[in-house]
Length: 345
Ligand code: NAI
Image (cartoon, rainbow, N blue to C red):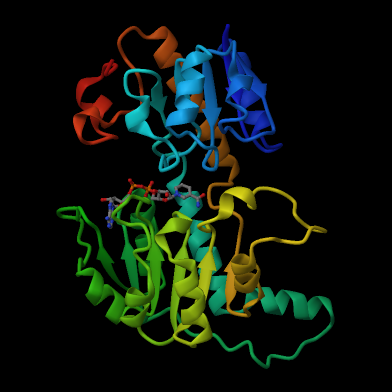
């Protein structure tokens, strides 16, 4: 039986992973703690670890896991900016779940956008208090507005399709534009200048970190609505707050936050929040924050568990093949196994 230390386990993870594990002879050791240098030792005796977006998988953690005999790091998410893939090479294989439900995230981005623009969050609270006033609830039509989409991969394209359904004009920026997609690609500066709504759907890399900073916000339309369901580090949060205070940014819809690792996914009610920046953001009337729940649908959770289990089985049972491996060696971290269908080391 394959033993897997499952870090940062939450109640909603258990049903799908327990079911898939039972079906395939994998025993998950569910741990509530996140993976970091202090907790890596808990994986001793396990063949693999299963980690999520806010676990720390840096060089030091990888070295400790290696010493503990762990041979596989199975990410149960798509993004891998928290993993030092380079440090893992030659020591521990890394696999991820490239797609589980791009619809879940794209639809959540739309949910945030509609809620914010049509003030649903305010109306909900008002009517519960029998306050039926409409003052301050004026929104705007999506129809005819321009939405700028940054990153036109799986999630970005579904988001685009939904926006087109609203009758919005879609422009997009991608470092690697999709040929023959029919998408109207523009430069980043043009996107900033023309968009009424900007939605981020690209990965967090050294290049994209703080792509929305003070200089970018300066180039945007007054009243722009910014949606981020991708990674918090794409936005310089201080600059975002300044843009909101200066009335330049009309609204911000955030499912992710730069410093979310110590706050999100936990019940902090009844505690004093030590993060002043997040407190100030949440206190703004035109900011909606959800705690990284874009992925949280039944379909996505089932797909995540099934793909993660298959990834683990492919490593331990299929000789030479490692499904969904992440490896920097080939220069294209995600393309590696697709081209070669074999383990890189
Ligand atoms: P994808 O890999 O299919 O698409 C990413 C797109 O970004 C690609 O078209 C790529 O060419 C583009 N890109 C790469 N570098 C860029 C750059 N420097 N500037 C502009 N575009 C660039 O990824 P997918 O599945 O669409 O996911 C997008 C992001 O959504 C992930 O990186 C992840 O951070 C985030 N995500 C958030 C979730 C949530 O629960 N909120 C759940 C799943 C993913």
